Amino acid sequence: MKTLSRTGVFQKERLPSVRPFYERELGELGRPDRKGWARVRRGCPFHDSKSKRSFFVNLQSDGAFFCHGCGAKGGDVIAFTMQRARIGFKEACQRLGCWNEGGRLPRRQLYLVRYLVMEYVIDGETYRAEVCDEPETDCQRLRQFFWQARDRSVEIRNGDGEAFEREQETQWSIMADSWELLEQEERGRYEWHCSSI
Image 1 (cartoon, rainbow, N blue to C red):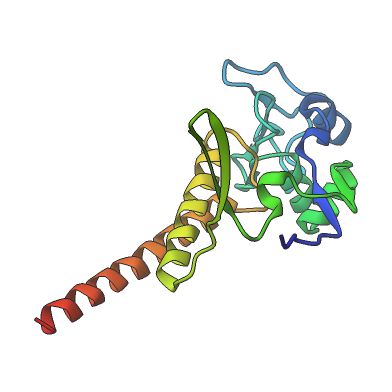
Image 2: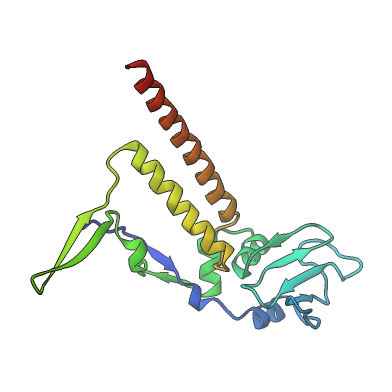
């Protein structure tokens, strides 16, 4: 089996706690509302806020933030660090202590070739078979891209933090593009079939 080689891996469980992180970075926070949004008393770190009332962080999420004054926003403490320090994802994770150099990817992301595993019983004997599930045609690859993007997009919608800025939009773009190409492929196959009759 082929494996992906990485120089490091993001480990979400090592992200700092949201409230202590923002208090250390921005100072005192106001009392959170029912949805977890708390106002930062010093104001927005991204622009010179005169009212000091425009910047909010969400303490019930992974640290989402939003400024009503300048429009700065993000889904977690990683996005905040990236924007504030103007650095990339990996460097932000290193600063936050959630990047493991030399780490390995979780098993579900580790293999380039996927296998379908089947277990069945014949005359009381249990058999196990692994069948390669690697796409062989462009159409199969497009379907795989579509479903992987859809699965990731559902994970994000269900609260999993984005791995990089605007990941949700990127996954939607992959889904839209692959769907359009699949429709063209199906239409072309149908038109070819009709013309050959």
